[in-house]
Length: 75
Image (cartoon, rainbow, N blue to C red; front, top):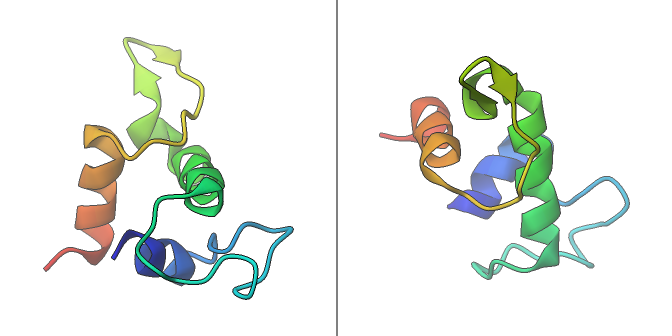
């Protein structure tokens, strides 16, 4: 589901890769990691803002990242 949501966002596979390089297979590998970072940067105001400071995109799907994904693609 994470890979599919990132694909709908136009962030999966990462810019320098294809679906041949990064198939949608349910595994959290480097391709997903890079795509999650891009997603976090795209929605930085909602995901990375913390106490008036902007955090760096980490590439892991933590609570704020998952909340935004659920807002956009959850049922």
